[in-house]
Length: 82
Image (cartoon, rainbow, N blue to C red):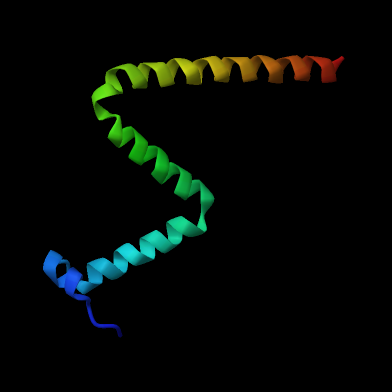
């Protein structure tokens, strides 16, 4: 097993925790969806002071897209039923 580096010792982080972090990073890198979700979470963290504006805006955007797609699905179902 590799010995911990000097920078790891300076942080005081145990070897098992660094290994766990490396495993998690590897799994995130292997799955594009997880990679994107982590990027979105980081962006939301950076915009924390604007959450009072962003969260309602994202809610409205979600509702608009949801209802538009729902109308499309029902229109397609009506056309297929005829």
